[in-house]
Length: 489
Image (cartoon, rainbow, N blue to C red; front, side, top):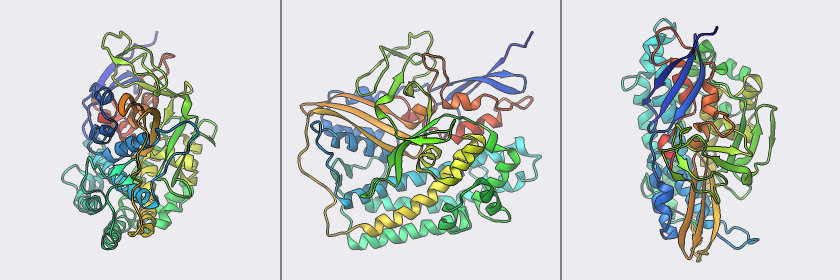
């Protein structure tokens, strides 16, 4: 007769944005099952109903203080999408799109390096690893508040964030992003300042994070080549890779799911990262059927039916006996899907990340590598967007827009695919639904009992004797970079 699994409850987690609880069923030396709970209800969807359409641009950024630009972009795109059937969407002027891309990129890249240096790497300084030959160096570099890395990263991040003052006036909760473009026109002198600010951040990346040119990092095409590149190299990315190899993080927190991306950083020739789907189970990419997205509420604290976010709007109700989270369960055609930087790069076809997933599936190591590779890719793109700005040309289309109809606004936040679905009636919001990246990744079980991505990734995580905060679980949870305050609306 097998021994009944024991229960371990972790929460609240430190070094994540918002409240999170994870319940683990432990069998012997590993996790047998997991349930992920988002215990904080926000209510932004309900707040917006009945308000003037433009209020979405004020309320949506306040969903989150660290990814507010992503919420602004999604809200602005949703408002811009309200139009008669068959009429093509009116795009912002090229300058407006460049400015929005830059504001969005600054926030996303700041999120990536903050996650790497302040949220993820400090776990390697834990006393759990004191016997490892790499621990002393990791502790000196990455210990929270005391490590030498933060003293270098924080000024570089501050320099990057200074670009927000030029591009958007303030951060967070900027109002510069509008359905027709950007309200903040950039002068020739400000364009030169932006170049200098970004050059300073590139210098940090090339000297401290990578110890290599961005172009060389972005061109690495296989995991074997990445490991060879890291050998004998300084830089914090190589430091991570050497530890990850020792801990076999390429086989930790593994999923083999569908990966989706809504498309990021629009441009005249198409987005920098395209919209699409990648099936990690079979290694195939294809178009993304947006209409197949639904939300299941069978294990969430809501009354009413789930369904397509364009129509369904379940109401809060804590009487559901099967529920254990405020997070709904988004599904794509009834299937679980993962989102994030790894998903974006799989859809975009980056050979390094596709090689990772072809070998061992989506893993802790693959998610972190994708995030850091994306820093190099986006910083290089930002240089082109700055150069493409024409200060003499318009930044915004201010023509009136329709005040009745429904639409969606899709974008990519640092943590993955973000969608806003709304309906306007006579200039007021009559329906608003939001699916955030962490809603996808931290979803509870659905009506078929299928766990969400994190719940699946935690199964099999090793548990050391006597551990009350298993370090393997910490790595897996943080590899998804959760933003719990964005999760429930």
